[in-house]
Length: 444
Image (tube, rainbow, N blue to C red; front, side, top):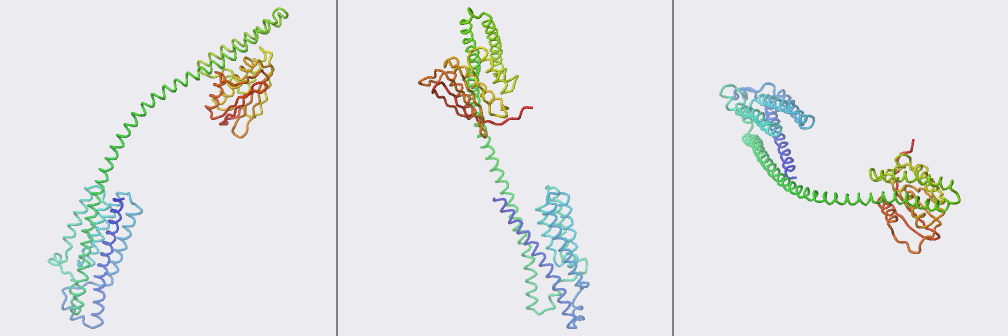
């Protein structure tokens, strides 16, 4: 904010310098034109010419050229500040152009006012990029200021003196005119000095601001180092927690697969024991089914250990994987399983498919192993971005629902996805789960 304020003040002072210079130029031209007109109107040309060493040629032309040069200076300043603000080549070119036409303007004024160069100095100090180019331009401008002094020029060349035009008037008017011209010259110099002072203060402010920024950067670096140290500690803690979660997840995967497979085998073997004497052929067929289930279970356990994803989901889509799981369970047990899927698109993200598959698998296992169920109903539908899953059986149920390993895993899986699950036991056991879904792509 402080540097911005200095920029605004410097810009305002430069505008005042430009305004004072333009007023001085117009003042000199106006005095010459008005005086020349009065001399002609009062028929005092001979006396006036006798008192002069030389006069300006066609004063009105001097005014016209002065106005043209002033207009060119304004246009040059506009293009330098607005249109080609960051163009170094144009900046130096426009500053050189300002210097040249300012010298021409001084010549048009008969060297009676060379303060226009102060405006050129101010622009050079503000806009010149690089110390070398800036010092060259300022040196040229200073030398030009010295060699455009009217008294110095008059030693070698005959030039008209504005004071001779002032002398035409009475003493009071003469005095006011001299005071006004000297006031404009002095004001121009004062504004230039003030401009230089603000420019120095701006540079000092810039240095202070840089030092302040360096201090803030050092403090930020120290804070960053502390943050990095804390981050390393947090990373170690997170790594340990990740290992713990991975162990728990691995335990759940193996429990779900192994429990499901062993439950089916246990029920199937019990059936074989009951039928081996009365129906050897049926028992043989049942044993073949049990062998197939055991092999599939072994494959899934290996898959759980390696990739922690059921082989059925790996090979099939979710709908087909659930159907196969139900078919396998029905083939080795005497349980009737009804699957009612009301979801048109059964393509979800991997973690969502895993959760749905495992919840159904664990619920079937619990219904057969603990509930001694003979019928199981699975209903799956969706509302908006929520999949509703209900698994209900006609087993023996329980009076008090105690969270065991399986139900805990079901709850953990659902909670990890931001869903909810309820367990109830009324004429059997019921699992109701709501799972938020990030809908995936349709199957091809």
